[in-house]
Image (cartoon, rainbow, N blue to C red; front, side, top):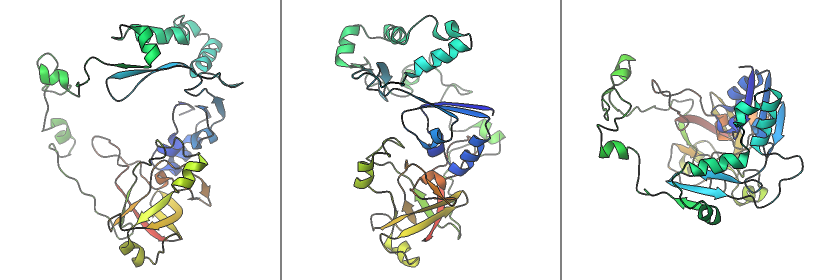
Length: 308
């Protein structure tokens, strides 16, 4: 990989095994980020383009359900700030491919085209209300297949839901769904879980100091495991795995079961002498995937916890 161009991503915080990803990232000859804040990823980029926030631009957004949102610009963007599309257009112009990239349309014209191609009938009402609820609110996964499996087959050899996978069998994996339990070892006996924080979305909003004061990043640990390690509530502990180490304050509580520790995901990483000190959970997670599906195993993490 020679060149990394990142939009809407903070992989050096949200990707598993931060240290490994950082080393790989730094091997690239050149890297660029579009950002509003100096995130962990932006800090390691050669160029950072300051981009507008959702308050500074008009856009159409889709959520997790059958609806569309119209987000209207409410404040002018700051000096030196550009929309993502503006930046990409300027780069395309320098590369001599501006017509191919834009197809002759401005950002506003692309938004109008997206709306025109949707099922929205009253465009002005949509822009005024800011939300459009799709006609099929009860629609879910595999709805077409369930209603007419012959007309809408699934992307499987039989076109149906398969409980036995010939492909998995050929790769030496179990051809039927089975529970695969990974047992902890003596070096890393505690299972780490990394749930969401109510004060942020992944890494977004972690940099708001008020939120950090409301809900300081701490490692939850059961009194049984704490006593065994001589850990007192409020003192700093060292979390370790084969991927890295984290130094963070302990929160001793019976609200978590013995054998399990908890660290909320999304904290921005900061390293001191090769140890992460702000509680960024991905400092100890692994990039090793499940096989043969290559799914993420971020939640299958076993660690050791000791007094710092």
